[in-house]
Length: 531
Image 1 (cartoon, rainbow, N blue to C red):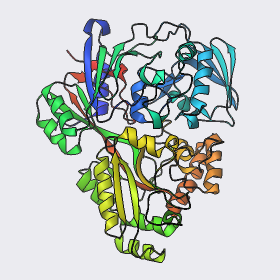
Image 2: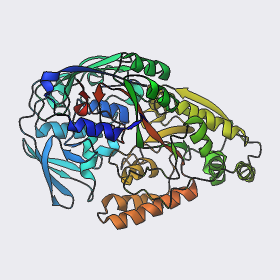
Image 3: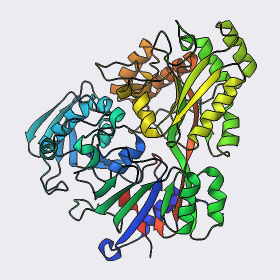
Image 4: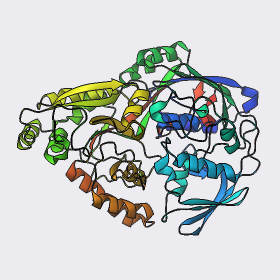
Protein backbone atom coordinates (compact mmCIF):
# COMPACT_ATOMS: atom_id res chain seq x y z
CA UNK A 1 0.00 0.00 0.00
CA UNK A 2 1.61 3.20 -1.18
CA UNK A 3 -0.92 5.68 0.20
CA UNK A 4 0.82 7.84 2.75
CA UNK A 5 -0.55 9.99 5.44
CA UNK A 6 0.68 13.56 5.55
CA UNK A 7 2.02 13.18 9.07
CA UNK A 8 4.32 10.45 7.85
CA UNK A 9 5.69 12.87 5.33
CA UNK A 10 5.95 15.44 8.06
CA UNK A 11 7.94 13.06 10.20
CA UNK A 12 10.24 12.35 7.30
CA UNK A 13 10.79 16.03 6.79
CA UNK A 14 11.50 16.54 10.45
CA UNK A 15 14.25 13.93 10.48
CA UNK A 16 16.13 15.34 7.54
CA UNK A 17 19.23 17.18 8.55
CA UNK A 18 19.74 19.47 5.61
CA UNK A 19 22.06 22.30 4.93
CA UNK A 20 19.52 24.66 3.39
CA UNK A 21 21.76 26.85 1.31
CA UNK A 22 23.95 23.94 0.17
CA UNK A 23 20.90 22.11 -1.22
CA UNK A 24 19.12 25.02 -2.87
CA UNK A 25 16.24 23.82 -5.00
CA UNK A 26 13.13 24.98 -6.81
CA UNK A 27 9.75 23.65 -5.67
CA UNK A 28 6.80 23.78 -8.08
CA UNK A 29 3.19 23.24 -7.10
CA UNK A 30 -0.36 23.76 -8.35
CA UNK A 31 -3.71 24.34 -6.68
CA UNK A 32 -7.12 24.20 -8.35
CA UNK A 33 -7.85 27.89 -7.75
CA UNK A 34 -5.92 31.09 -8.18
CA UNK A 35 -4.28 33.33 -5.62
CA UNK A 36 -6.91 36.02 -5.84
CA UNK A 37 -4.90 38.76 -4.13
CA UNK A 38 -1.65 39.50 -2.32
CA UNK A 39 -3.52 41.73 0.12
CA UNK A 40 -3.41 39.88 3.47
CA UNK A 41 -6.66 41.46 4.64
CA UNK A 42 -8.71 40.99 1.46
CA UNK A 43 -10.25 37.55 1.91
CA UNK A 44 -10.64 35.20 4.87
CA UNK A 45 -9.97 32.10 2.78
CA UNK A 46 -7.67 29.20 3.65
CA UNK A 47 -5.75 29.11 0.38
CA UNK A 48 -5.11 32.85 0.32
CA UNK A 49 -4.16 33.01 4.01
CA UNK A 50 -2.11 29.81 3.78
CA UNK A 51 -0.22 31.16 0.77
CA UNK A 52 0.40 34.61 2.22
CA UNK A 53 1.43 33.02 5.52
CA UNK A 54 4.73 32.38 3.74
CA UNK A 55 5.10 36.11 3.03
CA UNK A 56 3.35 37.89 5.88
CA UNK A 57 3.30 36.94 9.56
CA UNK A 58 1.22 37.52 12.64
CA UNK A 59 2.39 38.11 16.19
CA UNK A 60 1.74 34.39 16.64
CA UNK A 61 2.35 31.67 14.04
CA UNK A 62 1.38 28.01 13.68
CA UNK A 63 4.05 25.33 13.60
CA UNK A 64 3.84 22.04 11.70
CA UNK A 65 1.51 20.62 14.37
CA UNK A 66 -0.82 23.65 14.36
CA UNK A 67 0.45 24.71 17.76
CA UNK A 68 0.51 28.46 18.34
CA UNK A 69 4.11 29.59 18.71
CA UNK A 70 5.98 32.92 18.86
CA UNK A 71 5.98 34.83 15.61
CA UNK A 72 6.56 38.56 15.42
CA UNK A 73 5.95 38.54 19.17
CA UNK A 74 8.63 36.55 20.94
CA UNK A 75 6.67 36.33 24.22
CA UNK A 76 3.46 37.47 25.89
CA UNK A 77 1.68 37.51 29.23
CA UNK A 78 -1.71 38.51 30.61
CA UNK A 79 -1.34 41.52 32.89
CA UNK A 80 -5.11 41.73 33.52
CA UNK A 81 -7.94 39.43 32.36
CA UNK A 82 -8.53 41.76 29.39
CA UNK A 83 -4.98 43.06 28.87
CA UNK A 84 -2.09 41.23 27.27
CA UNK A 85 1.49 42.44 27.10
CA UNK A 86 3.34 41.41 23.93
CA UNK A 87 7.10 41.70 23.58
CA UNK A 88 7.80 42.17 19.89
CA UNK A 89 10.73 40.51 18.18
CA UNK A 90 13.66 42.89 17.68
CA UNK A 91 15.81 43.12 14.57
CA UNK A 92 13.07 41.92 12.20
CA UNK A 93 13.09 43.50 8.74
CA UNK A 94 10.38 43.77 6.14
CA UNK A 95 11.35 42.51 2.70
CA UNK A 96 12.23 46.03 1.56
CA UNK A 97 14.69 46.34 4.45
CA UNK A 98 12.68 48.58 6.75
CA UNK A 99 12.37 47.85 10.47
CA UNK A 100 9.38 46.12 12.06
CA UNK A 101 8.02 48.08 15.05
CA UNK A 102 4.95 48.43 17.24
CA UNK A 103 3.51 51.09 14.90
CA UNK A 104 3.21 48.44 12.19
CA UNK A 105 1.13 46.27 14.53
CA UNK A 106 -1.30 49.07 15.34
CA UNK A 107 -1.55 50.08 11.67
CA UNK A 108 -2.23 46.50 10.54
CA UNK A 109 -4.89 45.95 13.21
CA UNK A 110 -6.66 49.16 12.19
CA UNK A 111 -6.41 48.19 8.49
CA UNK A 112 -7.86 44.74 9.21
CA UNK A 113 -10.69 46.42 11.09
CA UNK A 114 -11.62 48.89 8.35
CA UNK A 115 -14.20 48.66 5.57
CA UNK A 116 -13.12 46.42 2.71
CA UNK A 117 -11.27 44.03 4.99
CA UNK A 118 -12.44 40.44 5.29
CA UNK A 119 -10.63 40.19 8.65
CA UNK A 120 -12.98 42.52 10.49
CA UNK A 121 -14.45 39.79 12.68
CA UNK A 122 -11.01 38.68 13.83
CA UNK A 123 -9.67 42.21 14.34
CA UNK A 124 -12.78 43.26 16.27
CA UNK A 125 -11.79 40.95 19.10
CA UNK A 126 -9.25 43.61 20.02
CA UNK A 127 -10.57 46.76 21.72
CA UNK A 128 -7.36 48.74 21.57
CA UNK A 129 -3.58 48.53 21.31
CA UNK A 130 -1.31 50.73 23.43
CA UNK A 131 2.27 51.26 22.29
CA UNK A 132 4.63 51.12 25.27
CA UNK A 133 7.75 51.40 23.16
CA UNK A 134 8.91 50.28 19.70
CA UNK A 135 8.90 46.63 20.75
CA UNK A 136 6.29 46.43 23.49
CA UNK A 137 2.51 46.72 23.20
CA UNK A 138 -0.51 46.21 25.45
CA UNK A 139 -3.47 44.59 23.70
CA UNK A 140 -6.86 45.15 25.32
CA UNK A 141 -9.82 42.90 24.56
CA UNK A 142 -13.51 43.71 25.19
CA UNK A 143 -13.73 40.62 27.44
CA UNK A 144 -11.37 37.85 28.54
CA UNK A 145 -10.40 35.88 25.43
CA UNK A 146 -8.92 32.41 26.09
CA UNK A 147 -8.01 31.96 22.41
CA UNK A 148 -6.58 35.40 21.63
CA UNK A 149 -3.20 34.04 20.54
CA UNK A 150 -4.86 31.81 17.95
CA UNK A 151 -6.90 34.75 16.70
CA UNK A 152 -3.67 36.67 16.13
CA UNK A 153 -2.20 34.08 13.75
CA UNK A 154 -4.08 35.45 10.76
CA UNK A 155 -3.94 39.16 11.49
CA UNK A 156 -0.94 39.63 9.23
CA UNK A 157 1.37 42.55 9.89
CA UNK A 158 2.06 45.06 7.11
CA UNK A 159 4.62 47.85 6.91
CA UNK A 160 2.89 51.14 7.81
CA UNK A 161 5.38 53.29 5.90
CA UNK A 162 5.29 51.10 2.77
CA UNK A 163 1.49 51.07 2.81
CA UNK A 164 1.24 54.84 3.17
CA UNK A 165 3.87 55.43 0.49
CA UNK A 166 1.99 53.21 -1.94
CA UNK A 167 -1.47 54.51 -0.98
CA UNK A 168 -2.72 51.12 0.19
CA UNK A 169 -3.82 51.91 3.72
CA UNK A 170 -7.21 50.24 3.10
CA UNK A 171 -7.79 46.60 2.21
CA UNK A 172 -8.74 45.24 -1.19
CA UNK A 173 -12.40 44.28 -1.15
CA UNK A 174 -13.04 40.66 -2.13
CA UNK A 175 -15.88 41.85 -4.36
CA UNK A 176 -13.46 44.05 -6.32
CA UNK A 177 -10.32 41.92 -6.59
CA UNK A 178 -9.16 43.70 -9.72
CA UNK A 179 -8.96 47.07 -8.07
CA UNK A 180 -5.84 49.16 -8.39
CA UNK A 181 -5.01 48.71 -4.71
CA UNK A 182 -1.20 48.38 -4.66
CA UNK A 183 -1.27 45.63 -2.03
CA UNK A 184 -3.46 43.56 -4.31
CA UNK A 185 -0.54 42.96 -6.67
CA UNK A 186 2.51 43.65 -4.49
CA UNK A 187 3.71 42.38 -1.12
CA UNK A 188 6.16 43.46 1.57
CA UNK A 189 6.03 41.20 4.59
CA UNK A 190 8.49 39.82 7.10
CA UNK A 191 7.94 36.16 6.23
CA UNK A 192 10.35 33.45 5.09
CA UNK A 193 9.61 33.96 1.39
CA UNK A 194 9.44 37.05 -0.83
CA UNK A 195 7.05 37.46 -3.75
CA UNK A 196 9.25 38.09 -6.79
CA UNK A 197 6.61 37.76 -9.49
CA UNK A 198 2.83 37.70 -9.41
CA UNK A 199 0.75 37.35 -12.55
CA UNK A 200 -2.88 36.91 -11.42
CA UNK A 201 -4.45 33.67 -12.66
CA UNK A 202 -1.13 32.67 -14.27
CA UNK A 203 1.84 32.30 -11.93
CA UNK A 204 3.33 33.45 -8.64
CA UNK A 205 7.04 33.10 -7.88
CA UNK A 206 8.51 33.26 -4.38
CA UNK A 207 12.17 33.42 -3.38
CA UNK A 208 13.68 32.56 -0.03
CA UNK A 209 14.13 35.50 2.32
CA UNK A 210 17.84 35.44 3.12
CA UNK A 211 17.30 37.81 6.05
CA UNK A 212 14.52 35.82 7.68
CA UNK A 213 14.64 35.97 11.48
CA UNK A 214 13.66 32.32 12.00
CA UNK A 215 15.14 28.93 11.22
CA UNK A 216 13.70 26.75 8.48
CA UNK A 217 13.86 23.03 7.77
CA UNK A 218 13.30 23.78 4.11
CA UNK A 219 16.15 23.77 1.61
CA UNK A 220 13.98 25.46 -1.02
CA UNK A 221 15.13 28.79 -2.44
CA UNK A 222 12.50 29.30 -5.12
CA UNK A 223 8.82 28.34 -5.19
CA UNK A 224 6.66 28.49 -8.30
CA UNK A 225 2.88 28.34 -8.01
CA UNK A 226 0.57 27.77 -10.97
CA UNK A 227 -3.23 27.60 -10.70
CA UNK A 228 -4.59 24.64 -12.70
CA UNK A 229 -8.37 24.31 -12.58
CA UNK A 230 -8.67 20.97 -14.39
CA UNK A 231 -7.93 18.07 -12.06
CA UNK A 232 -6.80 15.78 -14.87
CA UNK A 233 -4.24 18.35 -16.02
CA UNK A 234 -2.91 18.80 -12.49
CA UNK A 235 -2.46 15.09 -11.95
CA UNK A 236 -0.86 14.62 -15.38
CA UNK A 237 1.61 17.42 -14.66
CA UNK A 238 2.60 15.74 -11.39
CA UNK A 239 3.12 12.32 -12.97
CA UNK A 240 5.14 13.82 -15.85
CA UNK A 241 7.49 15.51 -13.38
CA UNK A 242 6.52 19.07 -14.31
CA UNK A 243 5.30 19.69 -10.76
CA UNK A 244 6.36 18.54 -7.30
CA UNK A 245 2.98 18.87 -5.58
CA UNK A 246 -0.65 19.30 -6.64
CA UNK A 247 -3.86 19.68 -4.65
CA UNK A 248 -6.54 18.73 -4.41
CA UNK A 249 -6.33 15.38 -6.17
CA UNK A 250 -9.68 13.76 -7.04
CA UNK A 251 -10.09 10.85 -4.66
CA UNK A 252 -10.70 8.54 -7.63
CA UNK A 253 -7.13 9.29 -8.80
CA UNK A 254 -5.42 7.99 -5.64
CA UNK A 255 -4.95 4.53 -7.16
CA UNK A 256 -3.51 6.07 -10.32
CA UNK A 257 -0.89 7.87 -8.26
CA UNK A 258 -0.14 4.74 -6.26
CA UNK A 259 0.62 2.86 -9.45
CA UNK A 260 2.68 5.61 -11.11
CA UNK A 261 6.42 5.87 -10.66
CA UNK A 262 7.98 8.67 -8.65
CA UNK A 263 4.79 10.09 -7.13
CA UNK A 264 2.46 9.35 -4.25
CA UNK A 265 -0.93 10.43 -2.91
CA UNK A 266 -0.92 12.16 0.47
CA UNK A 267 -4.19 11.83 2.36
CA UNK A 268 -5.44 12.72 5.79
CA UNK A 269 -8.41 14.15 7.67
CA UNK A 270 -9.11 17.82 7.08
CA UNK A 271 -10.53 20.08 9.78
CA UNK A 272 -12.92 21.66 7.29
CA UNK A 273 -16.68 21.17 7.30
CA UNK A 274 -18.58 21.50 4.03
CA UNK A 275 -22.15 22.71 4.50
CA UNK A 276 -25.18 24.32 2.87
CA UNK A 277 -26.62 27.62 4.02
CA UNK A 278 -30.02 29.23 3.40
CA UNK A 279 -31.11 32.86 3.43
CA UNK A 280 -33.28 33.09 6.54
CA UNK A 281 -32.99 36.84 6.98
CA UNK A 282 -34.70 38.54 4.05
CA UNK A 283 -38.49 38.70 3.87
CA UNK A 284 -38.25 37.67 0.21
CA UNK A 285 -35.51 35.61 -1.40
CA UNK A 286 -33.36 37.34 -3.99
CA UNK A 287 -33.32 34.35 -6.31
CA UNK A 288 -36.57 32.34 -6.22
CA UNK A 289 -39.95 32.15 -7.92
CA UNK A 290 -41.65 32.68 -4.54
CA UNK A 291 -42.55 36.33 -4.14
CA UNK A 292 -43.69 38.20 -1.06
CA UNK A 293 -42.29 35.71 1.43
CA UNK A 294 -39.22 33.64 2.18
CA UNK A 295 -39.71 29.84 2.33
CA UNK A 296 -36.51 29.40 4.38
CA UNK A 297 -38.02 31.36 7.27
CA UNK A 298 -40.23 28.31 7.84
CA UNK A 299 -38.38 25.65 9.84
CA UNK A 300 -40.46 22.96 8.09
CA UNK A 301 -38.88 23.93 4.76
CA UNK A 302 -35.41 23.78 6.27
CA UNK A 303 -36.24 20.38 7.79
CA UNK A 304 -37.52 19.25 4.39
CA UNK A 305 -34.18 20.17 2.79
CA UNK A 306 -32.33 18.33 5.57
CA UNK A 307 -34.28 15.11 5.07
CA UNK A 308 -33.97 15.32 1.27
CA UNK A 309 -30.17 15.08 1.37
CA UNK A 310 -28.61 11.64 1.19
CA UNK A 311 -25.18 12.25 2.72
CA UNK A 312 -24.18 8.60 2.43
CA UNK A 313 -24.81 8.73 -1.32
CA UNK A 314 -22.65 11.85 -1.61
CA UNK A 315 -19.96 10.07 0.37
CA UNK A 316 -20.05 6.95 -1.81
CA UNK A 317 -20.77 8.31 -5.29
CA UNK A 318 -19.17 11.75 -5.23
CA UNK A 319 -16.40 11.37 -2.64
CA UNK A 320 -15.54 7.68 -3.22
CA UNK A 321 -15.97 6.98 0.52
CA UNK A 322 -13.22 9.46 1.40
CA UNK A 323 -15.44 11.98 3.21
CA UNK A 324 -17.05 11.79 6.66
CA UNK A 325 -20.75 12.80 6.81
CA UNK A 326 -21.31 15.35 9.55
CA UNK A 327 -24.10 16.44 11.85
CA UNK A 328 -22.11 19.36 13.24
CA UNK A 329 -20.55 22.51 11.84
CA UNK A 330 -17.14 21.53 13.22
CA UNK A 331 -14.74 18.65 12.61
CA UNK A 332 -13.37 16.27 15.27
CA UNK A 333 -10.06 18.17 15.35
CA UNK A 334 -11.78 21.33 16.61
CA UNK A 335 -12.08 22.16 20.32
CA UNK A 336 -15.74 21.77 21.27
CA UNK A 337 -16.62 18.95 18.84
CA UNK A 338 -19.04 16.41 20.32
CA UNK A 339 -19.35 12.79 19.19
CA UNK A 340 -22.81 12.54 20.77
CA UNK A 341 -24.15 15.43 18.70
CA UNK A 342 -22.49 14.49 15.43
CA UNK A 343 -25.46 12.61 13.96
CA UNK A 344 -26.58 13.87 10.53
CA UNK A 345 -30.26 14.47 9.77
CA UNK A 346 -31.89 11.22 8.61
CA UNK A 347 -32.42 10.77 4.87
CA UNK A 348 -36.19 10.56 4.47
CA UNK A 349 -37.56 12.00 1.19
CA UNK A 350 -41.14 10.99 2.05
CA UNK A 351 -40.95 13.03 5.24
CA UNK A 352 -39.39 15.84 3.25
CA UNK A 353 -42.42 15.97 0.93
CA UNK A 354 -44.78 15.96 3.91
CA UNK A 355 -42.94 18.87 5.48
CA UNK A 356 -43.00 20.87 2.25
CA UNK A 357 -46.72 20.27 1.88
CA UNK A 358 -47.36 21.28 5.49
CA UNK A 359 -45.43 24.50 4.86
CA UNK A 360 -47.58 25.28 1.82
CA UNK A 361 -45.17 24.11 -0.88
CA UNK A 362 -46.71 20.82 -1.93
CA UNK A 363 -45.61 21.56 -5.51
CA UNK A 364 -42.18 22.69 -4.37
CA UNK A 365 -40.57 25.95 -5.44
CA UNK A 366 -37.56 27.27 -7.34
CA UNK A 367 -34.37 28.68 -5.88
CA UNK A 368 -30.87 29.48 -7.19
CA UNK A 369 -27.92 27.79 -5.54
CA UNK A 370 -24.48 29.44 -5.48
CA UNK A 371 -21.56 27.03 -5.62
CA UNK A 372 -17.80 27.39 -6.16
CA UNK A 373 -16.32 25.10 -8.79
CA UNK A 374 -12.63 25.31 -7.92
CA UNK A 375 -12.44 25.65 -4.17
CA UNK A 376 -13.35 22.43 -2.34
CA UNK A 377 -12.92 18.76 -3.21
CA UNK A 378 -15.58 17.91 -5.83
CA UNK A 379 -17.52 21.06 -4.89
CA UNK A 380 -19.53 21.37 -8.11
CA UNK A 381 -20.27 17.63 -8.15
CA UNK A 382 -21.61 17.87 -4.59
CA UNK A 383 -23.86 20.73 -5.64
CA UNK A 384 -25.08 18.76 -8.65
CA UNK A 385 -25.94 15.87 -6.35
CA UNK A 386 -27.86 18.23 -4.04
CA UNK A 387 -29.78 19.61 -7.03
CA UNK A 388 -30.76 16.07 -8.03
CA UNK A 389 -31.83 15.09 -4.49
CA UNK A 390 -33.97 18.19 -4.01
CA UNK A 391 -35.60 17.66 -7.40
CA UNK A 392 -36.92 14.34 -6.10
CA UNK A 393 -38.94 16.15 -3.44
CA UNK A 394 -40.17 18.84 -5.82
CA UNK A 395 -37.67 21.65 -5.32
CA UNK A 396 -36.15 22.97 -8.54
CA UNK A 397 -32.67 24.32 -7.97
CA UNK A 398 -30.96 26.51 -10.56
CA UNK A 399 -27.27 25.81 -10.00
CA UNK A 400 -24.88 28.74 -10.40
CA UNK A 401 -21.37 27.28 -10.24
CA UNK A 402 -18.55 29.81 -10.52
CA UNK A 403 -14.78 30.13 -9.95
CA UNK A 404 -14.10 30.99 -6.35
CA UNK A 405 -12.99 34.55 -7.09
CA UNK A 406 -16.42 35.41 -8.53
CA UNK A 407 -18.25 33.24 -6.02
CA UNK A 408 -16.71 34.88 -2.93
CA UNK A 409 -17.12 38.34 -4.43
CA UNK A 410 -20.85 37.63 -4.80
CA UNK A 411 -21.87 35.83 -1.62
CA UNK A 412 -19.71 37.47 1.09
CA UNK A 413 -20.45 40.69 2.97
CA UNK A 414 -18.48 42.75 0.47
CA UNK A 415 -20.82 41.48 -2.23
CA UNK A 416 -23.93 42.25 -0.20
CA UNK A 417 -24.62 38.60 0.68
CA UNK A 418 -26.05 38.13 -2.81
CA UNK A 419 -27.26 34.56 -2.34
CA UNK A 420 -30.37 32.58 -1.39
CA UNK A 421 -28.87 29.11 -1.07
CA UNK A 422 -25.19 28.24 -1.12
CA UNK A 423 -22.42 25.75 -0.44
CA UNK A 424 -19.47 26.80 1.69
CA UNK A 425 -16.62 25.21 3.62
CA UNK A 426 -15.16 26.42 6.92
CA UNK A 427 -12.04 25.64 8.88
CA UNK A 428 -11.89 27.72 12.07
CA UNK A 429 -8.52 29.44 11.98
CA UNK A 430 -8.27 29.21 15.76
CA UNK A 431 -9.07 25.45 15.70
CA UNK A 432 -11.73 26.28 18.32
CA UNK A 433 -15.54 26.19 18.01
CA UNK A 434 -15.80 29.82 19.13
CA UNK A 435 -14.62 30.87 15.68
CA UNK A 436 -17.55 29.03 14.08
CA UNK A 437 -20.00 30.50 16.57
CA UNK A 438 -18.88 34.10 16.15
CA UNK A 439 -18.46 33.85 12.38
CA UNK A 440 -21.27 31.54 11.20
CA UNK A 441 -23.87 31.05 13.93
CA UNK A 442 -24.28 34.45 15.55
CA UNK A 443 -26.66 36.99 14.05
CA UNK A 444 -25.15 39.39 11.51
CA UNK A 445 -24.15 42.47 13.49
CA UNK A 446 -22.19 45.25 11.78
CA UNK A 447 -21.52 46.96 15.11
CA UNK A 448 -20.03 43.98 16.96
CA UNK A 449 -18.68 42.41 13.73
CA UNK A 450 -20.24 39.08 14.69
CA UNK A 451 -21.87 36.76 12.17
CA UNK A 452 -20.06 38.36 9.27
CA UNK A 453 -19.83 35.00 7.45
CA UNK A 454 -23.38 34.01 8.43
CA UNK A 455 -24.39 34.56 4.80
CA UNK A 456 -28.01 33.51 5.30
CA UNK A 457 -28.30 35.36 8.63
CA UNK A 458 -29.51 32.45 10.75
CA UNK A 459 -30.33 34.33 13.97
CA UNK A 460 -31.29 33.27 17.49
CA UNK A 461 -30.70 35.66 20.44
CA UNK A 462 -30.14 32.70 22.79
CA UNK A 463 -27.35 31.42 20.55
CA UNK A 464 -25.84 34.89 20.54
CA UNK A 465 -25.99 35.11 24.32
CA UNK A 466 -24.33 31.74 24.83
CA UNK A 467 -21.74 32.37 22.13
CA UNK A 468 -20.70 35.61 23.80
CA UNK A 469 -20.21 33.75 27.10
CA UNK A 470 -18.25 30.98 25.37
CA UNK A 471 -15.93 33.60 23.90
CA UNK A 472 -14.80 34.74 27.34
CA UNK A 473 -15.17 31.54 29.41
CA UNK A 474 -11.82 30.09 30.45
CA UNK A 475 -13.20 26.92 32.11
CA UNK A 476 -13.17 24.34 29.30
CA UNK A 477 -15.87 22.14 30.88
CA UNK A 478 -18.23 25.10 31.16
CA UNK A 479 -17.33 26.15 27.61
CA UNK A 480 -18.09 22.70 26.22
CA UNK A 481 -21.45 22.53 28.00
CA UNK A 482 -22.49 25.85 26.49
CA UNK A 483 -21.16 24.84 23.07
CA UNK A 484 -23.27 21.66 23.20
CA UNK A 485 -26.36 23.71 24.05
CA UNK A 486 -25.73 25.97 21.08
CA UNK A 487 -25.29 23.05 18.71
CA UNK A 488 -28.50 21.38 19.94
CA UNK A 489 -30.42 24.60 19.29
CA UNK A 490 -28.97 25.05 15.82
CA UNK A 491 -29.75 21.43 14.94
CA UNK A 492 -33.36 21.74 16.15
CA UNK A 493 -33.81 24.90 14.13
CA UNK A 494 -31.91 23.51 11.12
CA UNK A 495 -29.84 26.66 10.98
CA UNK A 496 -27.45 25.00 8.57
CA UNK A 497 -27.15 21.75 6.61
CA UNK A 498 -23.76 20.15 7.38
CA UNK A 499 -22.56 17.82 4.60
CA UNK A 500 -19.20 16.32 5.53
CA UNK A 501 -15.57 16.74 6.38
CA UNK A 502 -13.64 16.40 3.14
CA UNK A 503 -10.31 14.57 3.02
CA UNK A 504 -6.99 16.22 2.54
CA UNK A 505 -6.02 14.95 -0.88
CA UNK A 506 -2.65 15.95 -2.24
CA UNK A 507 -0.33 14.37 -4.75
CA UNK A 508 3.44 14.70 -4.30
CA UNK A 509 6.63 13.77 -6.06
CA UNK A 510 8.94 11.35 -4.24
CA UNK A 511 11.62 14.03 -4.50
CA UNK A 512 9.92 16.23 -1.91
CA UNK A 513 8.79 15.98 1.70
CA UNK A 514 6.04 18.28 2.93
CA UNK A 515 3.93 18.77 6.03
CA UNK A 516 0.22 18.21 5.41
CA UNK A 517 -1.55 20.12 8.18
CA UNK A 518 -5.26 19.50 8.92
CA UNK A 519 -5.99 23.13 7.98
CA UNK A 520 -4.90 22.36 4.38
CA UNK A 521 -2.25 25.07 4.38
CA UNK A 522 1.06 24.57 2.62
CA UNK A 523 3.85 26.01 4.75
CA UNK A 524 7.01 26.42 2.66
CA UNK A 525 9.14 26.33 5.81
CA UNK A 526 8.67 22.57 5.94
CA UNK A 527 9.14 21.72 2.26
CA UNK A 528 12.32 19.76 1.66
CA UNK A 529 13.63 18.67 -1.73
CA UNK A 530 15.27 15.27 -1.28
CA UNK A 531 18.55 14.42 -2.96
